[in-house]
Length: 219
Image 1: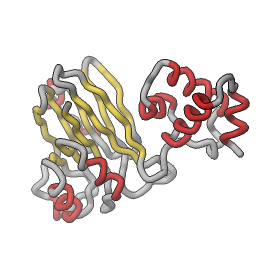
Image 2 (image 1 turned 90 degrees about the vertical axis):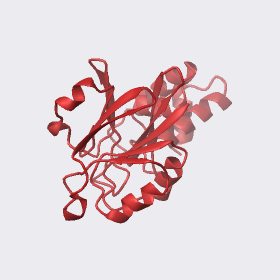
Image 3 (image 1 turned 45 degrees about the horizontal axis):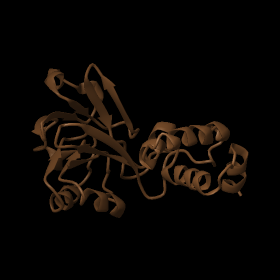
Image 4 (image 1 turned 60 degrees about the horizontal axis):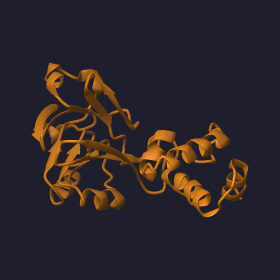
């Protein structure tokens, strides 16, 4: 299996947790807004690096491409910082990778995977700190894994906008299907830690219901 690490919008901050994950990858992609040359220098010591220039990358980054296309492990990857600036070069890509918004997203459109790994650098407003992995099997099958960083992981039960009971029911449903915890967290839109707590409570307390889980987790 091949593993590719996707990051974006580090804005001068390369977190130790991100470095640790990237060391497990074969290749690294950075979708721009790097902020400083020393961030690139550090990334280059980890694994082969592909990078594009972001809108916040000024004079020092003039030599970096605005967009690039790379073929790796049987797939074609197109990368640019701002999705609004995508060119016709993306038309034949299997993966379209971008950043800029600081919001994690991945979806399939017209046979292509559109992936924004979010920001794993400095926090913007209350957005989570994220990156992405693409794992490619020898037969070409791909799995996209969202990674939440540094305990600042998406929506938690402290967020008043979340329907707690609905979140627990959704997690239990996906857990019963045998899905990995990272996939459950991403699909349900909640933090990995919260997902882990719900699944642990559900699996270690036979017969526990939604209210029982909520009572234990929120104490």
